[in-house]
Image (cartoon, rainbow, N blue to C red; front, side, top):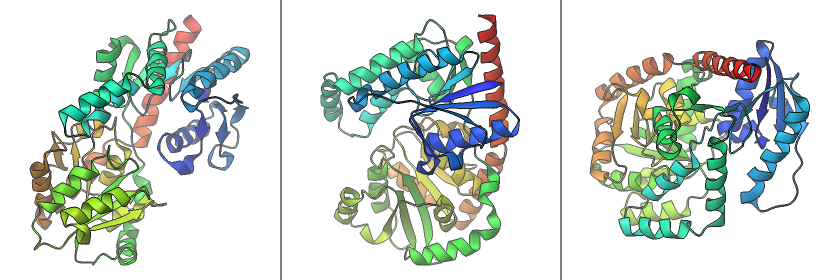
Length: 389
């Protein structure tokens, strides 16, 4: 097939969707598919050697208008090329396949309010959003994207996201395909775990005998770090427990909160981690009490590493768990007592060992190769639709 990936920037070292695009491109290239990339920036060293690049140049404009200009420029280029199955990963119209790994913007905006515990604060922020030009622009573009007369095939990353498409845009099953994210278990070869565990615990000032929970994310507030610190305060202090916080270097606000709660001695802020395997292998279990994640890749990676998981029902990845087999799913991250109880359960070595086996087994049932085959089927369906039209 002739496939075009359309995304503003493909720099896989930044992680997330950009890492995924590179991995999918390499797998498609290995099968002999003809690949094109329409982007403003990319890292050619991380992409297949035979990919065709189509640079998109945009005029100077406010950041919130960039998706409009980028989408229009890509559509013009695609019309000239013809015959390509065009795949978009963000807010774009006129494409054959839309794969929004970040979920719906409309749903994201609503869930972002949940991180504030006060209903009054949520209402005030909702009113403020109604006057935010960026918010209004993104909503308008998303409405146009999913009400496109060309009816693109839409890939939902989880059942939660598929439900959001139905609720917000009334999109039915004929245009929706569920394809969950997956991870490559070979990336997390367990044989070097003992070495990494000792080496990085020492670097981060954690004792070999401590029970370590890992939290990872860039948007600490959205991913639930505040309620997690409150939950740590409610745990027994007579147990050798430590929390590693990985991701962003912007930790000052949460370091102050940890001090105010009296848990600063139990929390280690390690910042950006270039190789997440070091953090996974240094930990005993993974905690991700997020207020919104379409399907958290770090949860899938943690499970592939054999880490029990505590997450929330606002995470699409929770649909893969069968509590308490692999860990626990909480209904509300603001329920500090419930979150603390789940963490305390995993301080028990026997419980933790059982959950670790369950997590590894569940992760092995859905691999990147399974994911790739489903994506290939969606691309083939889109190509058939295009040809029929």
